[in-house]
Image (tube, rainbow, N blue to C red; front, top):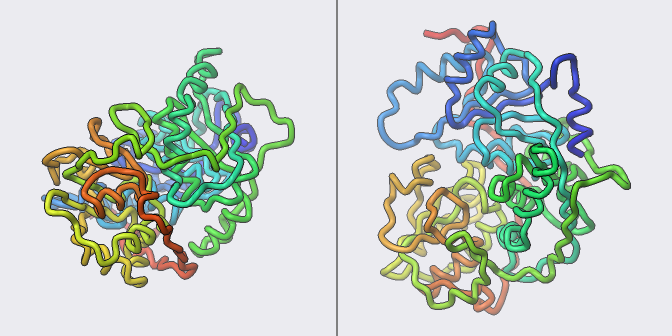
Length: 421
């Protein structure tokens, strides 16, 4: 799949790029592009994300106008965390995206290939110039079987780490020093939603891979239809007998609820009784809409223990709207959850410093945190301590609505008349 995407964009002196996603230093890339002659970018999508939601933001309006004037789209503060917003509203299968944030590996769940590149490459792409990319190696992960109750996509991602995907990637890379892309396929892919696939694809930077990518199939087409972006769909699948540098096979039916603690993946039951003080649900990856609806049902009529702070950072504004419409947000608030802004500083703990052990659904940057699935976190909130979520006994049945809000109210798009004030 990787070679198909790259071969289709090969031109003289490099590759044509379809999209650019900027979340770390968008103005640096645009300033460099201006020096290369940028007037107005002609890319399919060039998106800059405002990642600071709390605190002084006086310069944002002027900076936003400058970006819009050159054809970029700006996801304003409050739209959500960059990677999940991009998956919903911009990512398209069989396209090539360059970014300055490794978390955009998750858009591979939608069949898009996203590479983190230096500012010079991002600027060249914005200016419409070809970009040189070394030919990557490919590692194939084959998924078979069906997940059991209380096993989420986050558990599958942790299982890949536990099974040594990082070592597989390292061996493939050491053959000639090339970057490695993890291509994920197998008969069970069709059972996974695009959200599930994105959570699994987000494991790429954690195992040393440059990117991860899933096929684009009927599930992808349904996802884009629900986002009212049907025209963006393109089928993408590996050719029969396509060569790979290595292959890993995973039986989803053998995956247990897992946690990542101190860099080591362990069964959730091994941490039974270990108290936590700070639970962060949501954030930039690790959580799907289905997971959030399930957590709300599991915690309904329960109360956050006195020794735990439960922070809910909605991954995207769209998800927040759906949770509100379905009544799940009210259930979480009644439980005692604190709704927090999708601010990048949630990752560092700068906005909400923890007072004790942190457990979270996404790898938000706290090295000493325990990373676990949303349902495992729900169990910790319900009981006051970590443990196996199968202790809930009865799994909840979740119906994810197909009608989604797609008004993009916090996504600013410029016009040909947009000028810098």
